[in-house]
Image (cartoon, rainbow, N blue to C red; front, side, top):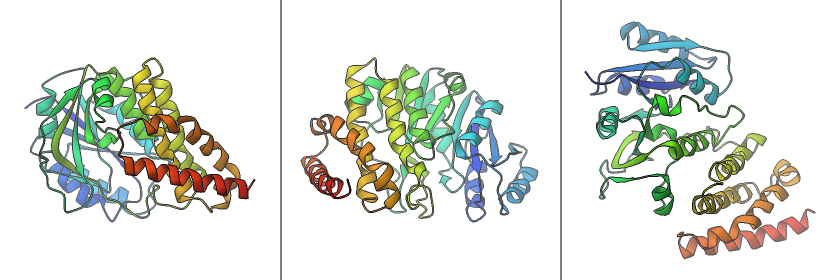
Length: 306
């Protein structure tokens, strides 16, 4: 039968999408799963839909809590999970039938290994990617620019994450901090050349909403990652280069009054501080030129609104 795998699904006002998600989860080719549905105080019919499914399949366990955000829901899932391994699925996404099977096959019964798949970002991607399995430790992944950071791409031994929790103060970037934290603890990481997870890019998600203070947690998350890797100069410098991506905040919210008055100088400070790490990174020359142009525009705007 294989080891028990816990699949943690935070649920909040997703009545339009939750059936699609659950249909693909309960249809996994790997059968020994427990599905932990953590309802985060939904005000629509999400909870009743989950009740319907849990009555039909005893592998589904439904918990209800007051609204506290996706991180608090995931943390409760970790607390109550019984599986040797843990995965995470968002309720508006869905997965391939062999999502768990492929991940756990590569895991090979390990207790100090993380296996990542890749994801579909739109309906036109090919499932299989023309490259081999990449394996190494966290330093190797940094060195080769192997991207991690989406918690739902991975399968994690519960013993490896037992002392970690998602930061409940973060709106964006909470999963990035979690993944980089656990990756540093693992002896080996695998990245499969296969897309097994379907990410649904909702325009009403936190990523695309108008500016609010929660958007700043994208920057704060990389502040934390830099601290996590402070004892490793190479990886720390790579993290500083990646943090420059936070400059997207300026690009997206140049003319937002709240951002401009309260956060513009703060983000600009980090941009200047870490820009050199980005310029010596492996990013393309075109992307570096774009960032320099953005920097020039930002300086003009900053002077205008001082």
